[in-house]
Length: 120
Length: 114
Image (cartoon, rainbow over all chains, first blue to last red; front, side, top):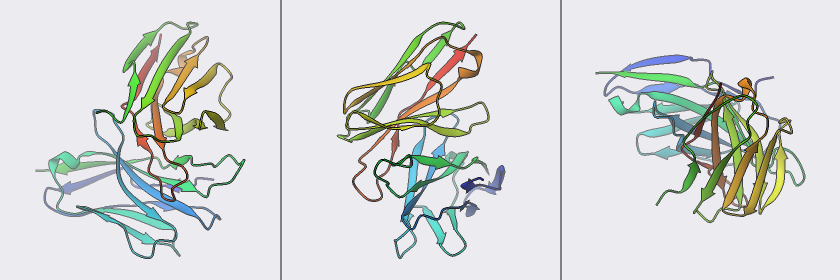
């Protein structure tokens, strides 16, 4: 079963508008972290924002904010005031709780990605 | 001032060859990872080392052998390369003991097996 689901293969947004990229996750672990990464056409993976499962407030980093709805198991990325340079693939990822001797020790499980295109 | 670096950036080789990819991080992190991104852009963990010890091995063929000579380096050696090994390989690092640690990725190594 998919642990991280990004249902939008592609999204389009007009420059200067806001856009929401969807991410839902599945875990029974009470301790987990959710991450968003950006991969531009040049190929590198750029960390954008992090949300911990115990964090009371939604994470924000500049123009990026994470709409964390724990009961719905969703962690949507909101990009405000889109710029042309925001055009890229965006990945949602989850790190489940650290388990001594277990295989989920720190690894990230990624969603399929969403290609965002910003139009001028 | 590169945080996580990988060499080479591009690797084109023939089927059956053996090749290595090197990774170094200067962030002082204690955990390093190898991920594989396939042609459909799907990213999957391969290995993880914490303080030079293997802690994750995600059912990767034993043709792939990671080696961590010290905390700052994690190399990936691939024997008898196959066409299906063509992918982008990313190295990453994090400080595992900190709750909410972020994994920082290297620039990726694009491997093409002919």
